[in-house]
Image 1 (spheres, rainbow, N blue to C red):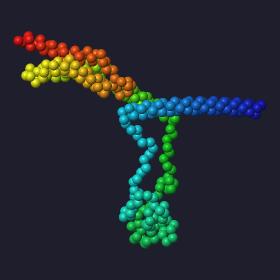
Image 2: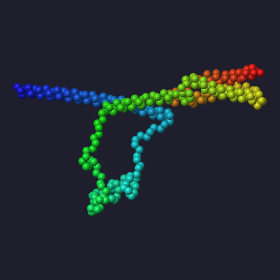
Image 3: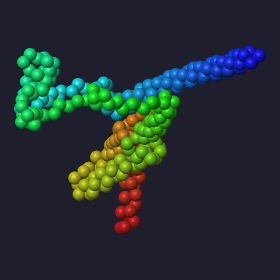
Image 4: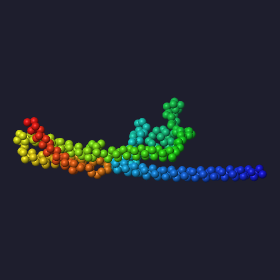
Length: 279
């Protein structure tokens, strides 16, 4: 009876151990499947980030970095007094000559055969730790889940910086914190102010007979306002357009026309009213 009980207990133990092994294998398979899915997801995400960075680099005219390691052209160093070689040695011994340069060559031993006095002047021969029987340092095991979590965090950080870059790239170089309409009004008013100054100079020149009345009237009603409108239009198209996003800058031509073609005549009328008031 005792033998049968022991046999039954052993069978139960083996059955429990087999179920535990099956559960472990299933859990490991699920873990590997989850890791594979995470790797595929991160690979697609990093590929999309790389494409987006290349697009931003082409937008700001920055060349992508070279792919792959660059070949080293450093010369191979030899013993003191030996000629420097820029490539591998011909016989594979590192350099030609020396007592221990090529062990096993005929007539050349691995060590000096001098006497006791000469042995004191013999340089020691370096022996690697592995050849001496010292076990090398074991590389620590890497947890794939931890590495994937670190990659995911770095990807999140890259996404955050990419979003900040895109937000900055969507702002124009001219008055980036202003709204498009406020920027256009400021630009057109600036050119209109320059035209008003030129008009005042022409009025003073007309008072001394340098500029005729018809010329002053033509520039005041058409020439200077048109130049202001065209100048504001060009400036908004060049510096009012964001680097990424909109292909054309909002220029508000109706507002520009009203500001430019009303500013100069109104300024001239105000100048006349001021002169008559002062008189």
